[in-house]
Length: 273
Length: 148
Image 1 (spheres, helix red, strand yellow):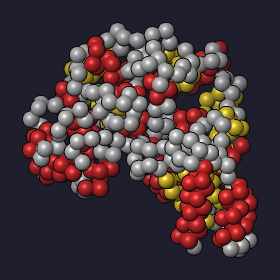
Image 2 (tube, rainbow over the protein chains, first blue to last red):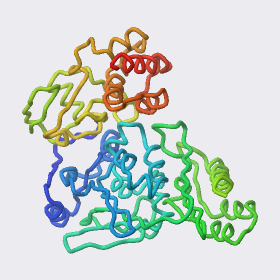
Image 3 (cartoon, rainbow over the protein chains, first blue to last red):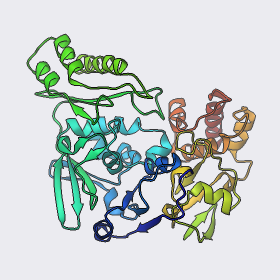
Image 4 (tube, rainbow over the protein chains, first blue to last red):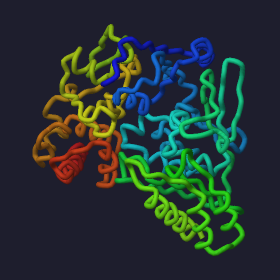
């Protein structure tokens, strides 16, 4: 590994209160869960921090439960946990599909929902699902808890409203009305970061979110409004192409992403009719 | 820190953030787990933690405290899966093989009826540049059939 961890410290707290105290008292502490992003950064010679806090002893944060009609997914639930959960399979099948496209079996056993959200990559596979499902992110700090609508959680490229003394403890998803849809396009089926990733819900008013086409995961309000009003699909796709801001990077080009994004929305609309 | 390694209790005094892969290879001389990419893409360093396949290049050793870790050295060498891979020539250069065997072992242990689709899915995180995968998939299905 290119970054030496010899001078780093790792705390392991057995209680959430203890973990929150560490984050409050040592504000630059980097939380660790599945390590599938942080340890890749260390391998590349980056240094996300010198003080780390291992969250994996906090077993209670791994639970997937319900509260009224809301699905409550603990931040430490792994992609495998999501696929095995009967609650997720019945209520949020598009999240099961998203979890199945992350890495291979090994990464799915390790990576967590909270990590996917906190890492704030625009390519995060589960993020479009939360963006179209009315999800809320539950944040806890030493001074209390707050909830943030998922669609207001990100403020820019790899930036979110999470303060460094806060932990994502859960994501809550209300009952989703309508047909759910998920599709990821990458270089290969497994072990590839997306070139474009789409989640959609075909309900009373359609909801669409795309990843890897802008600095954060994005909802598509103009495209959604045109689809809801019965406009022709081509008009909605013209709006879509203007509504996203993909870039050329190592994984793809802006032009390709724009075309694929339009194709994915066209497919969503045809297949959920 | 304490954990179980290939069935034996171990106690180690190591930096908690060292990669499990490095501790296995450098401190414990268990060099069966290979480092391919070092970033969780290739699966050559796959080990089982509490029966589930994970990549040991992305795990701080502290996270296996109290866990049951299985490396390729924990298999007898004539495990049905190993024999099937030899018979079907599911190994050529051999770098991916320990990880493939462990990922496949998790599937064979957990799955009552592995289909080709399930085998491909279970091994999607293990890259092999030699075999073209078909011999590996045949071997895993054959080993499972023998188990029954």
